[in-house]
Amino acid sequence: MSEERFITTCMNKKEEEFETSLRPQTFDEFPGQDKVKERLQIFVEASKQRDDVMGHLLLCGPPGLGKTTLAHIIANSRGCEIHSTSGPVIEKPGDLAGILSSINEGDILFIDEIHRMSIAIEEYLYSAMEDFFIDIVLDQGVGSRTVKLTIPKFTMIGATTRQGMISAPLRSRFTMTSRLDYYNAETLQKIVLRSAEILGTNAAPDGALEIARRSRGTPRIVNNLLKWTRDYAQVKKCDVIDKEVADKALNMLDIDMNGLDEMDARILETILVKFKGGPVGVKTIAIAVGESIETIEDVYEPYLIQEGYIMRTAQGRVATDKAAQIFGINIIEMAGKQGSLF
Image (cartoon, rainbow, N blue to C red):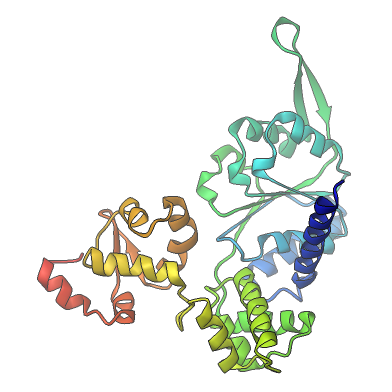
């Protein structure tokens, strides 16, 4: 291995260990998502009392809310090993067979972005999840034959940001489906204070709350913003991350008081100013802001819709009065000039 590759590998491993250190290891350490946690704790405890393998579980919701973390917490609580992979990595049946043949009874197979698996791979999972075997086809043509591979009883945990893209036959094989929602600012504040303690950073409650308010309801984002604010405080010689320090640090990232970043503002401004509040199609918005349709739909729109800044209609996206107020626009007057926005 070259010296450059060795250094890169060590840095990646160090970063991975660093990220892992911020992740809660037990249900008690995991803040928020109380209803989901309660269901999962019963799910795990019941299997422990029966000394039986847990049923299959599907975790869904926007990215960065803790689906992977919960999968590892379940494994820790159950006292079993977790084998992690992702949908795009499993390209052919042999890949899946290799993974399944390496697990032990009671282990967890965690597949992130499970909706991105091909239909051919999904079909192999049907028998694996229900009857714990897969049929492998050897050779090709007239000499081909099928070999039945028996696998130990295991628990499948799938994570997805787009539940609707999972085929109905696969979705029906999960015993439980749990959806994670965005976090409120108070819960995210607890995450900031906990992460700051792990990082050895002095964060005041008001500074933690300021970071939390601008984190789009997402723990992954709140930790990233905390690390940036820590760097800012270190360079600017600030002993404590208070509200003023957090505000200055986040303003440098163009994240405003409402938690909207530069792209959020561009999307809202495009709908409000260029297209008079809408309705306007997402394809047009994507061209106007120079971003892909998928990114807008998966990354930006969920938060903007949930916070009430835009609405989806049959005709296209429409900006709300809440969005107009940010830019000082009277949406009622605008609606009167062009007829009706709705």
